[in-house]
Amino acid sequence: MKFLSILLIFLLFSSLSQADYKMVAVNGAPELKDSYPYKVTFGTSWEACLATCRTFPDSLTCDMIYLSGDRCSFYCHGDYNKIRNDGSESTMANEMVAIKLDIPDGECLGSASDTIDSQTGSSSALATDIKSIGITVTPESYDITYNYADVCNRPFRTGIPCEKTCPSRMYSFRGTISMENGKTVANGPWNQCVTKCLHDENCILAASNTYTACVFFGIETFTELTLSDSYEIDSTATEYLAIKVEFLVFRTHSSEYL
Image 1: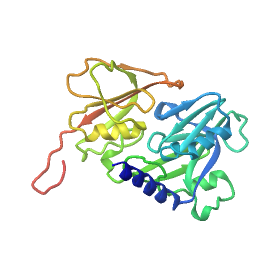
Image 2: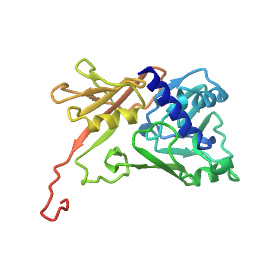
Image 3: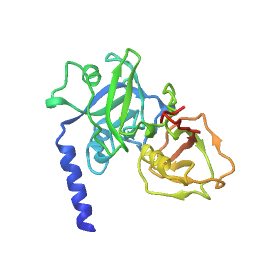
Image 4: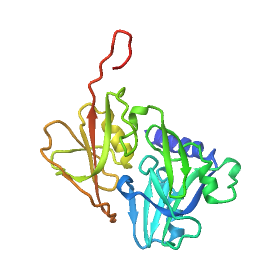
């Protein structure tokens, strides 16, 4: 069993090393209300923040970093969707983002924005079911789209239409719940936790109160939860919740969904 674990890690590194991943940095910040870091450190320099993302074990999960002052937040694909574009002449120099991208032939284009805008590459980290990403650059933002192997695994987010051909979907938001009756499952980035709950027939709500924690709740295991409009990030506590929204899907005689 130990040999198989070592072999799996070796194969993982082999597949990742075939691509030429580089960290492309821009001035800006992720939209905090719809982003879910898996780790936060304080007292961190920009160089140390970059190095951590590129070094094992974070290299397996880290796809983006965000530095605000001396606070570094680490993200996996699927856990961020929009980045504010502060432009190359930004005066907000204490906020920087770097995205790990597969750069063809290892050559960046004329500017960071041009390099990001050309991105249609694969996901470098272990993002659940995400095959590739695309990034659209506007004067106001960098908008990230994810290509899922199964579209039903894509969580509900602002501006994304509801595909009622999916029997159920997950909706992430900020909030708190008593963890007393929850079931702790394997730890990992928030997107992975949400996808696991989607495919667990007994899970109707996923929660995380510390980074990488993943706790499942079933029917009648909780009576209330508290919504939060605070998106402040600290070094230990999170307020991540995701609820499963199920649809009544009917099939006609012609095998089409109503």
